[in-house]
Length: 300
View: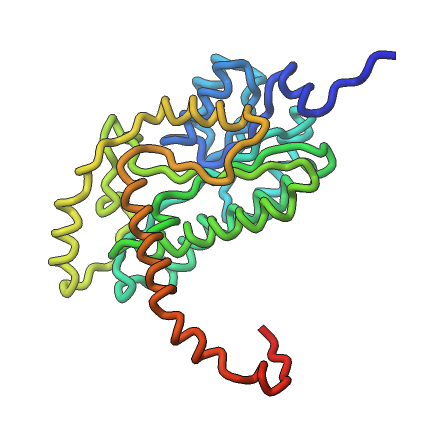
């Protein structure tokens, strides 16, 4: 009696099944096109499915357009279930939906902060929670989270976005440790600037999500605006091809930077953090106190 192929082996034979959020434009759209062009199947979600008409015309049943807002938990669970029922399985879950709220900490409204987290953090959680039972049942699957260089470093005027992306980093690192025993993989994609808008490097200070401006920060805004676009923009098509390589890998990385120009900066940021902690060892020891010596058992 011949050995039956595993779920992973079947996915290679039949093509992978993707569930991609935020698929109407930008990197998400390029991910969808790359997967479909090599014979994979894709459940593509967006707030409006009109942008998928050409894909349906070209790829037929291989693409399942789903109207979905990641901030609507019920809609997310329904969409994931529909995708699973339509294709029979799910192999790659890409949490791509997100946006950048720009503004100094003092400028941000409560609504702007909550909306940023509803999309970038809670939306990702709902997708993970909806898909995880199916992947666990299969004993395979791959969660891909679009994070950002902004999830590794922090710059002025991007506080809301940075907080959300740092949260995404922690969310997925935790997830990776929780699901490894189930045969499920996790990868954080950390892009720099990509030419997703008519070949231009997007300007985070002019992306339609700007807080009400306080003149006190005008000088800082001007200086940052002059720096924007100084680094070369990445090619979204190349990024999509690289993602295919990652999801096909037997041992994909937990984290990978997409694009050039930030690796050296990140190295310096982490070196500075390590030095700060090392320089503060005396304070760390002092803060610990002498309870251990007295026989106490303090709780962490």
